[in-house]
Image (cartoon, rainbow, N blue to C red; front, side, top):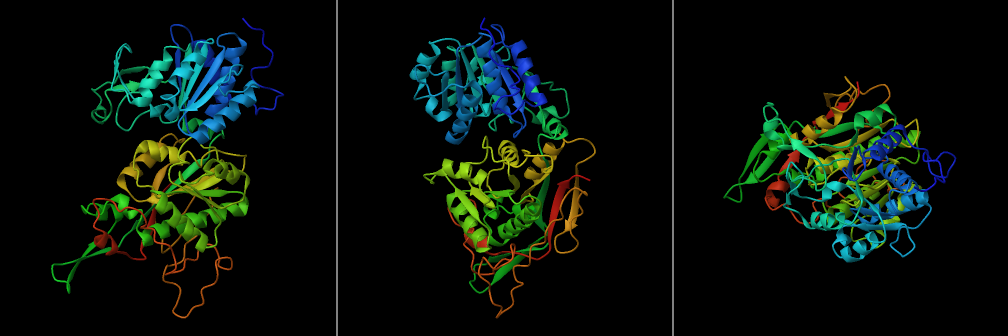
Length: 509
């Protein structure tokens, strides 16, 4: 056994002190990890601080002589770079895979190509393997944990490497896969199919070793309370051309869900509809203006559907006088932009999926969700980008999206983790009286009508225009990029929204 050289709670050091849940999780892991139970899963809500917890746990295992090396696996280069910085700060030694380093940090994508090199690293001594955002690996594992099949490429590499490590630590805020497959190395038990609700759930349920929910994080003032806004319209016209070029038919819909029941108007196309998405953007922008009156560094995030869509959204925001940071996989300095955004006062960061998980930008207070992806996992990861608190005066945040039955169901499930009886649905007219919010929340700033600019009005340059005033004609097309395969683009251009917008709001009362 090695003698301890530092206090395990890091008191008096350069590293931030541990939160209560982090200390409890470390104690649980230290008591659990053994030759008989070498795998540990920490399920903690996005934004809770899993990275620091795992680094301090690694330090404890190094100091008590249980391990000699640490191997970190993460989903993206940005996440891996952040992890390396955190681990090296806590451990005081590099993790770059060199001979005298204490370990290495690699992406899942690189895992398959570096498997031989990493196995060699594991042969140097006993290894703790930390696999972050563990839902990226897939398998079908038997209930007794003895038989595994259906592995994806990352799952295969993970199991191949696992044979050479002593302990594994899995981290995730959403430890499930959209395809319904199991996660390798973790414990599952059979779900009780006698329950009325069990018919729609997997036949096996994951058994985490430690759980820290959003409800817990809000109670502990670790995470913000999200207010989720769903934009809808009560008078929608769909004009379609008939066989005759001189005639058309008009159909009227009273909500977005009703419109999306049309076979050629899916949700994935509506996020690109210029009029609809501009209204949602301006609602989110008005909210950010309010938060910046309290905190000038508060920022907003827009999640777009693809790179062309992200470019169009960034252009629109800049036309309104907002400062933006565009980060996509095509940006050669994407990771540097992410790092600089946190230290700057830029108002908006626009991305596709580079800010969806594991990226630490706690100054984000508003998210505008214009992604075509509608999985619960992606939705929760997106929400997790704006809930991490920085201080005692930022208890709330806002999440904006289009009214969609599936997304609304996800939102209700998220808020079931909140203390009772704080969550409920409230309907209010966008065009009429403002939404009534809790006394701690700021009122929604009403975006001006897109047609308020009269003929002959002088259009002020962006730096002179008040934020939220939208020019009617000179905006980039938000329908940029590849159209949804089910959508008739002529049909999409025939959709017209009235000014009767409403917001369905899930909020504190």
